[in-house]
Image (tube, rainbow, N blue to C red; front, side, top):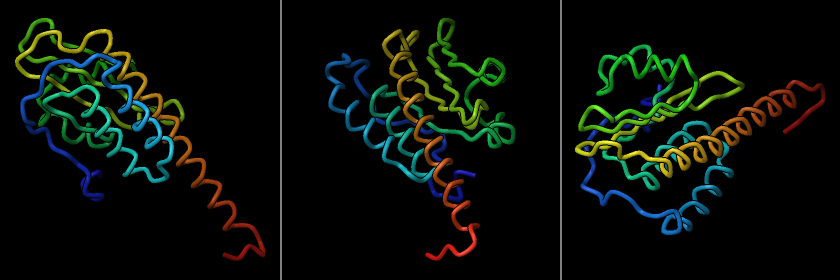
Length: 171
């Protein structure tokens, strides 16, 4: 579905990045990202900004926002195990993996009205345990910001639809 909007980013390698920046080094980016997410009034744009925020702040080699309906259709094409996809969807909480392989993976659910709407899937190849406490905290903060913005987008859309249904309402 994201492909319709031109924002479906398949898993593809990005240029090499240095592993970590401290939170203080990311502070300006945090402020800008928070403002951008909060001011977004369009779901596809919000999903793209969420993906870009994860890319900017967590610097993974692979990054994608996958809609729930796309997960069901495309799971086998993702470079993560079926077990990880099942785990994030069943627990409805962030999943980090990377203890036993040379790839660190983080799957973070994005919910709307208490239901998983999409999953932010990121990974870092070549490094075990790349996603530590600080990265998990950033991911949770980003998802919280995106979920609030997503709820605002949907509340505004419902309100706009109700106004159009009112008798005597003219644009």
